[in-house]
Length: 108
Image (cartoon, rainbow, N blue to C red; front, side):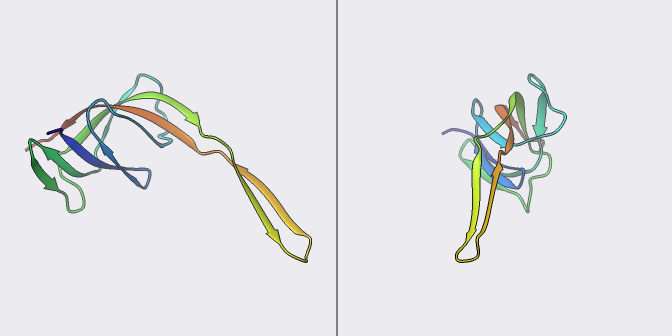
């Protein structure tokens, strides 16, 4: 059975295991090749045993390596109100950090 964890980053939850690559919201001051620890671990499953946090598990960390920083595809936001000649067009590109998960560690 694979070991995995559920991590909170950027207001979103991600299910990760060693070797996965995920995109999270931009983590400032991180560059390619840097390693970091995600310490908001909500759940860990190791060797078939599940540990739940309330809300996080103290001492649990997910080790990750920064693969790249970038910006996603442009999303066009177009607002329109009928019969009033009211139109507004905006665009948005979300910045992200791509992480490769290297391991899950528990301090018990």
